[in-house]
Length: 281
Image (cartoon, rainbow, N blue to C red; front, side, top):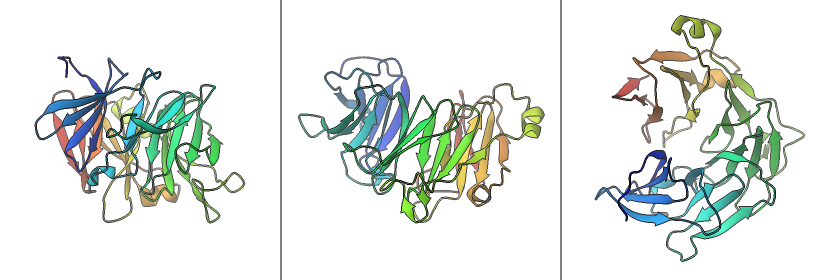
């Protein structure tokens, strides 16, 4: 690989955690594959005719646990399925003639996926290459990020000023497989309570990507996001009862990112500019 500096905007553990897929902030026309055993970039992938990548994810949630080379990616108007072993890297795709302005996506354990866009719309797909089973117009002006539970029943949708939790199994119907337009309930809305905003002097109430925990042995228990130097954690049992009562952990400086440890639900890593804190629940 040529000598270049990479500033990651997205990293994704892959192939039983032996590799890491990287999207570069300063050059988003390539997907990089980092060999974690040797610490070197071993592959760079581009697609002729498609000039940028916004996001990548496993073909199925927790796909990093398997030796599965296939993964998905999006840009503003296309969805790609990649197999690096093939000469034509994109083995399947969904193209749109008009720009849907995609922004983020997330897969389920069955390989279905949800895609959000900058117009506040959600699309639910059974599989790549097919039309969306549902297009949901949310009340958000734009969608920054989405994250699915393993079974696909819940979707956390991050908007600039709130987090919306959608139940996608409506009236016994799976929204990734069939239309749920007639049965879809309004989402549960999570916000930062005013007393917390005032207590910590928050000036920009903009959530980072809301994420479910990822314990392999059972269903999800928590949703986590950040605002400035605050780590914000909701108990999922409270959330599904429409109780907005988060726990807040204040760091010494703004949080750049946060991640649950794979397979664990007893705490979370809060990544600051100069240190990493592990917060136990």
